[in-house]
Image (cartoon, rainbow, N blue to C red; front, side, top):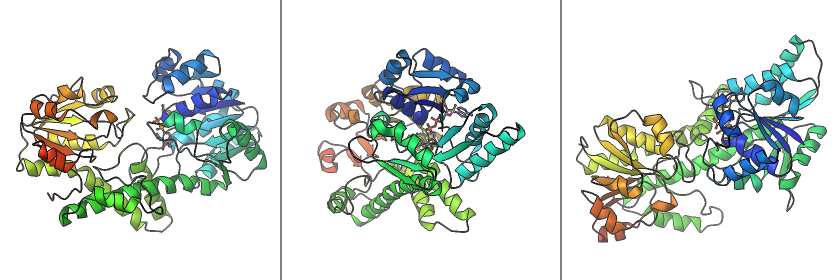
Length: 443
Ligand code: NAD
């Protein structure tokens, strides 16, 4: 099938590459000319395991093309995906300007029927707005061309985006049209072979499903962080509690880790956006408000511990920060906990020596101007002469370091472990002052 994807970010590029690899013809359109130029040259703008090979292979085979020219893109695909960003507006609700801009573009250039499929995470009712905007543009053009707008929210996880798209848990399609359902079933047929993954529903339910999924996952994290903060005050260990509750199959082990807060481009903005949507329809979503508030507080937790350990004065101290991306296996630093930590350290006069396996370029882009940030080439180099080690992201490479080396490299043997990677007893036995999250030590 011939497909156009508008918005070549984490979602658009991965989905385009995976669809091309299944044999579809995919035209990728983005307004960012530098990004498109780079893609044509084989330079991939994001780090995602397996993505570079997939893009190169399908570009070379002629199934994946890149353009900035919207008219070319609209002319190409029977199916037009919208996969642009939906960042938070000033009040936290989802800003739809990019989504509606693409809708206008499609309507401006289309000369045959199209199925417009929204993959961006958008508030309930957006498909209706996309439909209305397109109808206005077509009316201005005085043409009458049939089109459909469907919802097909994306559930990939950054860090395993390619694998998630190749083997999705579910494919949600929101439409009330038999024709759209049939065409999208055909599109996803290569990903739906082993067992039925396609779930058809009305458009509004599909739009809400995406928010409900992200908000539930964020709720699990904030719940565990609430328990961790209690555990610290009660002399309990959240890791023991996690094992204890996870063994109940109704609860399960997934997504119940305490830590220094969730970040990324989705959970923070999606919790906020659904909360604002609720307000717009006269409902106070108390749980969502609490989930967000707990997370905001949790992102300062490492700094609180650090400040307490150094008696409220970190001026002139140097901190080795391991992990800058919001989670492992990505270079994405949007709303990352590392940013809150580093900004608090800088505000209080400290210096940061940071290392991340993939996010160094992104850190340079965001904070490269800062004189109180030293970007180090290895995790070992980051330790050199630092007053403490702070672990912010649970990269595999940080899970079993040579602790003798760590102790020798630090000027004082202190570890703040924002992801509970290490065993408190073993750390104390090795001569470290160790702080985990919710591990019985109240600060
Ligand atoms: P992104 O910021 O990485 O990419 C968006 C791209 O859209 C950018 O390259 C931008 O230049 C482009 N763009 C903006 N306006 C355009 C236009 N008019 N025409 C063509 N391109 C345009 O965003 P993302 O992380 O891929 O997220 C996209 C959407 O998918 C968001 O709604 C997000 O919430 C949702 N989502 C993201 C993830 C994730 O893990 N990142 C997962 C599921 C859903």
